[in-house]
Image (cartoon, rainbow, N blue to C red; front, side):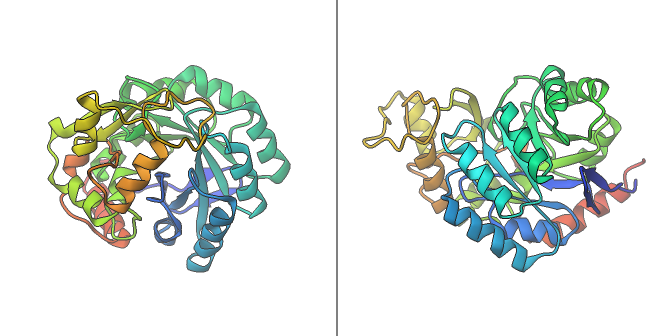
Length: 316
């Protein structure tokens, strides 16, 4: 099979592979630029960043690549509008919205000619997004890492979304190798989004401890956790998960008020930051459902080479 180009608004990616936007600081300029240099779409996860930090990351990415660079922001964060508007002002190529979307953001995209791409988990939401002005939708199933909007598998949702909208449809969740990509295209996808595989890359901003946990987990180590955001999250068993599972009080001493709505059970930003920095005692490690398929940490260039070789061997 030969992969087609991916067109989103006025953008054309040589390879239809979008790198997932993984916060906090897993997906930064180094990873995004490496993916863009291979012909995919690199994504900087701006959730948890200051405006100054996100602008610096976008500028750094521009120095490293002439390819397509986007941002991903969690809709649930209180400063969503501030961050997205700052990224648009900085000239970002596209915006991906995770865990929700609003009418306003499509207007921001229209005014700046910036494609807006929400992550959805049903045909109904995809149709609403298209009507509001989405340039494409990312269809994420239960197999994905991080915050989840559904208990349904991507392979069930994707054909339903494909039949409901005319804009490009990007498959996400459980896509690790070339065979997964081919299967997504057979189900009607125009492209794929891959997070977990790129989190386990040399260019990823994740700590060594974070990446090594990816390499030694078994299927039963992938669990659902309750997030203060109000959505379930897919993560890995570690000491933090054990403490949570045992009912230990993990509520923060000082609340950052970073979310629009928060249960207060624990600080999601702090837990994700600690994992990124290598603190497996107090950090929450998000991961996709099929992480056990990853056997080694590789540079992005090698990941792309492997994907393309695997795709070539699959019947079209």
